[in-house]
Figure 1 (cartoon, one colour):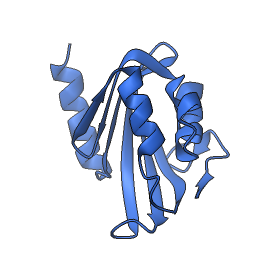
Figure 2 (spheres, helix red, strand yellow):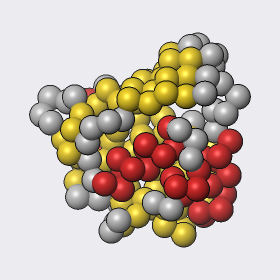
Figure 3 (cartoon, rainbow, N blue to C red):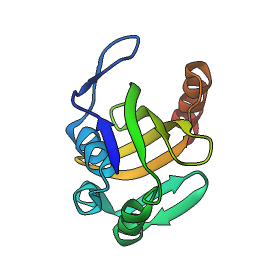
Figure 4 (cartoon, rainbow, N blue to C red):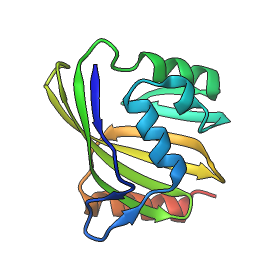
Length: 143
């Protein structure tokens, strides 16, 4: 069983950030293990990377969303969000539960194309100055 605190599209950050509906609704569905609804926000060619493991295409990502964390009980709370640019968002979630370590703070790095998620990278939270450096590097080196 999971619990989520995703009731608002305005998240605690230095400046309030309103998440795109796609990101907000994807997170709401995925945190309650509604893989069907979460997958509906994915592009057919979506790629998800979770802690270094890569899932490609809507079908593979759907299976990941269905199975990820299902063996644990945990709560999820959004603790931050920021817009990198029009197509890139980072949402930080804090998880507490029965998984090894008991507490995790994860960054969900979304890439959007229109109203669909094309890429999601889930990794340990990175301090803002490092995240900004990475975001700037990516923006300057990815076509």
